[in-house]
Amino acid sequence: VILALLAVLIGAGPYWLGAEPPAPPRRIVTLAPSLTELVFSLGEGARVVGVTRYDDLAEAKQLPRVGGFNDPSAEAVLALEPDAIFTPPSPGNRGPVEALVRLGVPALVLPLDTVGDVLTATESVGRALGVAERAAALKARIEGARERARTQARGRTRAKVALLVGAEPLVAAGPKSYAGELLADAGAENVAKGEVPFPMLSAESLLTSAPGVILVAPGMGAALRVPGLRARVVTLPSDAVLRPGPRIVQALEELQRALASPP
Amino acid sequence: VSARRLLLGGAALLGLLAFSLLAALWTGAEPVSPGDAGETAQAILWDLRLPRAVLAAIVGAALAVAGASLQAVLKNPLADPFVLGVSGGAALGGTLAIAAARTAALTGPFSFLGAVGAGLLVFALGRAGGRLVPERTILVGVVLNAFVSAAITAMIALLSPERTQALLFWLMGTLGYETWGTLAGAGAWVALGALGLFLLSARLNLLLLGDEGAASLGVNVDRTRALALAFSALVIAAAVSLSGLVGFVGLVVPHLVRLFLGPDLRALVPASALAGASFLVLADLAARVSFRALASEPPVGAVTALVGGPFFLWLLWRRAREAT
Image (tube, rainbow over all chains, first blue to last red; front, side, top):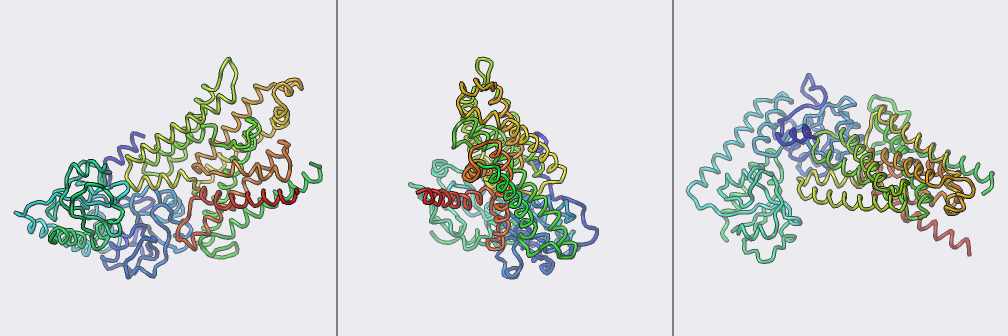
């Protein structure tokens, strides 16, 4: 238990389950929308043969669905004859993924909690696909966008903001999550604190922290019922902020715009 | 029940199990069936579908056998395999593994340890005056279950949303892909426990006459009951550590079998094993096939009650109409 706990707390980087393929994989199943988007944005979308049912990228619309985060069907994945699986370290899909690894399909496991994780994942996927330069370019683009956002935010008053990804219970993006880091880049003071990437908030702690702005993911605003809350609630235009992949550039722009929009 | 009816029933159940296993091999998320050539088709058939069907059969048999025996030992038609508290221990062990481990391979062993630990605790506290008191044992089990479910709820509040989801999914009862080694071990374990319960079944019949009646016929009442509870705990431990909490099978399959074969445990115990195995294989088949429509494989524990509940009620209703 202690070893397993340590492994989780330390949060290792990307790793292969099963043997790392000797040549770049040509048929890939991605088990998270953000990873699908990552492969496509590296220009290698043609290699993706299966995605989750949450994938909504236009170019991936026609691809076979193999299940969700907790319930990918090992049979549906195997039938696509992939030579690699790209997956976040989701405890829910671990059973099917390990079964597939036993059957000879290696899995590249990519933690995606922080912006650093996203950048490392970009490098790893780029290396695995044999397009390391494009990965480096994407990485530079992400870093450049963050740098610009920070420059623009400099000198402005920092609004107190809660970025909510869940309403019942209240779940916020903490400062140690990629979303929290983007929020800081956009010049906001995050009312959520602590080490947990996406901490749960109590209604009382949310009121006490007195955010001026509450940013919510699309479709969530109606569910947010905290009596006495005086903050301006802004619904983000897309769920880019929920996608720890190349769309964090878009997420950052959306956060900046939401914070800049007049009350 | 006549010998003829028993023979027919046994043959029918064996046929049903064979049919279920073949059906499970023939159908799934993908349109692949035996006879399809190609490496992928072969892998889907023999490395995914077959071990999973065997796992479903082992778990289903274990739950149904334990349910049939516990309903007799406790003289309570509502008894199911989860009243003993063993399932609570397994749930706690599995929860710890899902909460902390990076691999799914630890969930089974951890829940098994939890099950064994809970079993030992329940049996230790269920003793009074040097003998195992069933009511006491069950009470300890129920309290343990309540405690564990509270502990799990508290842990859910602390875990990240994705681990919480994975945990809830597992707790509902899911079947995965185990290695042949695990399946062989679990199969032998369950077979041993089921055999023990079968050997006790004649004495358990006499217990239904009441303790005094059974004792006057030469049954060692305390020992029989303790052994039956212990064997039930053994098979339940294997079932819950392999699948989480698959409900409904252990409660209803014995009743279903009783409707056809009567209450004689010598028939009920083995027949429940066969029927439980078939039922869970078919329920899992339904879960796997529904992937085609849902792009999701629902936990088999949801399917068992969803499909089995209405079916059982319909059967009860038909029986009542026939009787009038």
